[in-house]
Structure formats: C-alpha cells, structure tokens
Image (tube, rainbow, N blue to C red; front, top):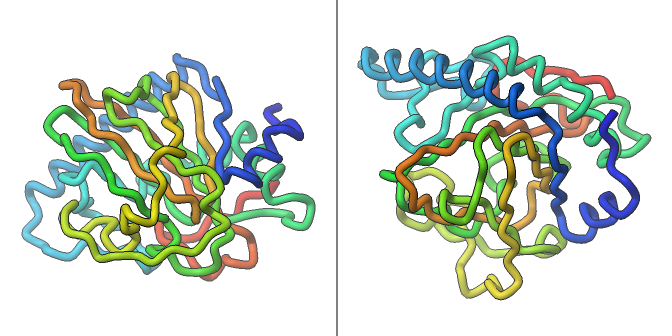
Length: 253
C-alpha cells in the first residue's frame, strides 16, 4: 500500500506539492494510454461531426457528448467516459495517499473532475503562472493528482511550481491566449519570483499531488512527440454538492 511518510506529508503541507515515484508500472501506463487514445479518437470524431457550439456538462450532472477542449490539449470527463478511468481514480494507491493528505477527520472524499492533458510539438505555448482554485466551485480543500503516462521533461512541457505559494493570496488577471482557457486564474508575472520555481520532471508511472492554490504553470513542449498525462481532482466530503465531471463519485478512504 502506498502511504506518504512524515517527511513527504511535511513537504506537502509546507510546499503545496509532493512527487510520488513509480505508483503505477510502465505496463499499466501503457494500458491506460491505449484506452485514452481510443477515447480521444471517439471524442475527435464527435467533435468533427457535431454542429453544436456549447459543450455542456461543466457545472451540471451531465457529461459532455462533445469534448470541445481537445484542440487546446484538454480532454475532460474521462472517468465518466470509461469505467477503467473511474476505477483508476478509486485505486487504493491513490486514495491511501489522499487519506494521508486529508487526515483522519475525512472519512471519504469526492472526485471533483477528471481529465487528460496532452501536448505535442505543434502546441508550443506553455501555460502561464496560475492557480486552479479560481475556476472551481466549493472550498479550496481540493487536491490534484497528475499521473505521467509518458516521460515528462522540461523539453516536452513539464509542470513547474512555486513552493509555498498555496499559503499566499494573489491578484488574478484575465490574460489573453489559450482560447479562453485558464485566463481568469492567471497571475501577473510580477507577483511571481521565478528564481524559486521547481520543475517537475517525471518518469512514466510517477504522480504529483498538489494543492489547488499553489502557483504553477508548464514549460513549452519543444519536441515533435506528444506527451500524455491523466489528471484527477479530489475534494473533501463536505464539498459534495460541487462537482464538474457528471455525477459526483464518493470515494471511501
């Protein structure tokens, strides 16, 4: 069983993130990636053949039939599109660590959203410094799990964090770019000390856990090859009325 040791828990509390190595095997990740690519093909076909403009499902109990963020490298609702991803979201190797983070007071937590983030050489922009919480309803007691299905390096667009920034408050700006995605959570670069940034380079099967308030972004993907990751966002049981990816899923510890 995976558990965080005391030093890892202290790091998560102090820095707002922790990396857990080799949670999943390369064989498992290859299987997840195969399923993801199949679902992506279905999503691309639905997007191509649909005249509809609005996606729906973002703040409702309905999963969007047409994933309209694919052109931005984001595939939403994956746990409600495929049962294997829902099983993965409930895997004890993840939920044990979440139990460590949330502590004994929380008997269970909810899956708030699920997605895949993918970048290729044609998507050259990185993601500006931002916080996740401005986009989401409920409290800020949310934890993001980011699972690497490919090796993630600075060259292919790894994430970057500013440790300890989940304890601070920031002004957000409505920055241009990304087709409207992420904009309201962007942080003026003048508020960020880039000398403190930490690059999260991950091997296949590694996972990062981060607080929804930590300031983070990503580097550009300078390589021609795409890199894929799975993202699950969890919240405390008391926030059960707020969820995004279809029906809320209660996950026991």
